[in-house]
Length: 104
Image (cartoon, rainbow, N blue to C red; front, top):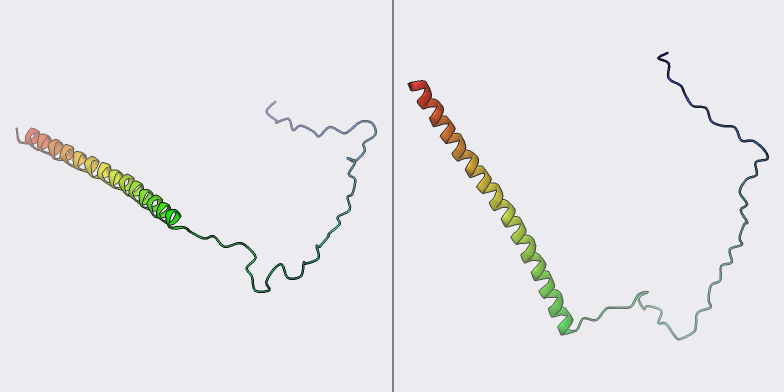
Protein backbone atom coordinates (compact mmCIF):
# COMPACT_ATOMS: atom_id res chain seq x y z
CA UNK A 1 0.00 0.00 0.00
CA UNK A 2 2.77 2.44 0.86
CA UNK A 3 5.27 1.21 -1.71
CA UNK A 4 6.17 3.77 -4.37
CA UNK A 5 5.46 2.86 -7.95
CA UNK A 6 8.57 3.33 -10.06
CA UNK A 7 7.76 3.99 -13.69
CA UNK A 8 9.42 1.75 -16.21
CA UNK A 9 10.94 2.93 -19.43
CA UNK A 10 8.68 2.01 -22.33
CA UNK A 11 10.28 -0.31 -24.83
CA UNK A 12 10.11 0.82 -28.42
CA UNK A 13 7.81 -1.09 -30.67
CA UNK A 14 8.47 -1.64 -34.33
CA UNK A 15 11.65 -0.94 -36.26
CA UNK A 16 13.90 1.63 -34.65
CA UNK A 17 16.32 3.42 -36.96
CA UNK A 18 19.00 5.82 -35.85
CA UNK A 19 18.62 9.42 -37.01
CA UNK A 20 20.01 10.02 -40.45
CA UNK A 21 23.19 12.04 -40.24
CA UNK A 22 24.98 12.79 -43.44
CA UNK A 23 28.71 13.37 -43.02
CA UNK A 24 29.94 16.53 -44.63
CA UNK A 25 33.36 17.03 -46.02
CA UNK A 26 35.33 19.95 -44.62
CA UNK A 27 37.50 21.61 -47.20
CA UNK A 28 40.03 24.03 -45.84
CA UNK A 29 41.21 26.61 -48.28
CA UNK A 30 44.04 28.90 -47.35
CA UNK A 31 44.26 31.93 -49.59
CA UNK A 32 47.60 32.66 -51.10
CA UNK A 33 49.15 35.85 -49.71
CA UNK A 34 49.33 38.72 -52.11
CA UNK A 35 52.92 39.89 -52.30
CA UNK A 36 53.55 43.43 -51.16
CA UNK A 37 50.08 44.06 -49.69
CA UNK A 38 50.94 43.52 -46.02
CA UNK A 39 54.15 44.54 -44.35
CA UNK A 40 55.82 41.67 -42.46
CA UNK A 41 55.80 43.47 -39.10
CA UNK A 42 52.28 44.94 -39.39
CA UNK A 43 49.79 44.15 -36.58
CA UNK A 44 47.00 41.70 -37.32
CA UNK A 45 44.21 44.13 -36.41
CA UNK A 46 43.81 47.76 -37.40
CA UNK A 47 44.78 50.46 -34.93
CA UNK A 48 42.18 52.88 -33.62
CA UNK A 49 43.10 56.51 -33.95
CA UNK A 50 41.45 58.88 -31.51
CA UNK A 51 40.62 62.35 -32.64
CA UNK A 52 40.55 65.16 -30.07
CA UNK A 53 36.73 65.13 -30.15
CA UNK A 54 36.56 61.39 -29.53
CA UNK A 55 39.06 61.59 -26.69
CA UNK A 56 37.05 64.40 -25.10
CA UNK A 57 33.85 62.38 -25.44
CA UNK A 58 35.49 59.37 -23.78
CA UNK A 59 36.77 61.50 -20.91
CA UNK A 60 33.33 63.05 -20.46
CA UNK A 61 31.59 59.66 -20.49
CA UNK A 62 34.07 58.26 -17.98
CA UNK A 63 33.59 61.24 -15.70
CA UNK A 64 29.80 60.87 -15.90
CA UNK A 65 30.00 57.18 -15.01
CA UNK A 66 32.25 57.89 -12.03
CA UNK A 67 29.94 60.63 -10.78
CA UNK A 68 26.80 58.49 -11.11
CA UNK A 69 28.38 55.50 -9.37
CA UNK A 70 29.71 57.76 -6.62
CA UNK A 71 26.30 59.36 -6.08
CA UNK A 72 24.65 55.95 -5.81
CA UNK A 73 27.23 54.71 -3.31
CA UNK A 74 26.99 57.88 -1.20
CA UNK A 75 23.19 57.68 -1.14
CA UNK A 76 23.34 54.04 -0.03
CA UNK A 77 25.79 54.95 2.73
CA UNK A 78 23.53 57.80 3.81
CA UNK A 79 20.53 55.47 3.93
CA UNK A 80 22.43 53.05 6.16
CA UNK A 81 23.53 55.89 8.44
CA UNK A 82 20.00 57.28 8.80
CA UNK A 83 18.63 53.80 9.54
CA UNK A 84 21.31 53.18 12.17
CA UNK A 85 20.61 56.53 13.82
CA UNK A 86 16.87 55.89 13.98
CA UNK A 87 17.40 52.41 15.46
CA UNK A 88 19.73 53.92 18.06
CA UNK A 89 17.14 56.57 19.00
CA UNK A 90 14.45 53.89 19.32
CA UNK A 91 16.75 51.83 21.57
CA UNK A 92 17.42 54.80 23.84
CA UNK A 93 13.71 55.61 24.11
CA UNK A 94 12.79 52.01 24.89
CA UNK A 95 15.57 51.78 27.46
CA UNK A 96 14.42 54.92 29.22
CA UNK A 97 10.80 53.74 29.22
CA UNK A 98 11.74 50.38 30.69
CA UNK A 99 13.99 51.98 33.34
CA UNK A 100 11.22 54.39 34.37
CA UNK A 101 8.77 51.50 34.66
CA UNK A 102 11.08 49.54 36.98
CA UNK A 103 11.65 52.58 39.26
CA UNK A 104 7.96 53.08 39.98
